[in-house]
Image (cartoon, rainbow, N blue to C red):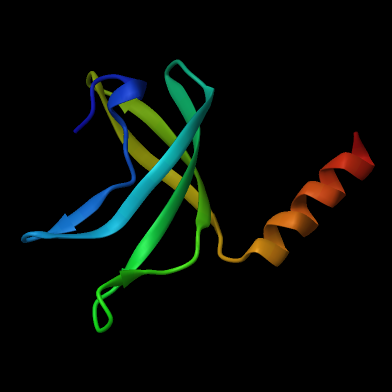
Length: 92
């Protein structure tokens, strides 16, 4: 488990295969509750190639000195990401 926000990652490895590859992250909030937005790709086990870029927004809570994931929202397509950006821009 991660003890600092900077240690948190979305990378996920099974045996020697990196199944979820973190490309970038943006720390949105720090503290007892942290919010991080990750840019990542999933590995297609059949083709052994990484798929399209996706975004995951995750909330972590610090419990007993370690961050634990509390919730997540995944943006699975470029179209959905652009719709979210357009809506936020319209509201703000």
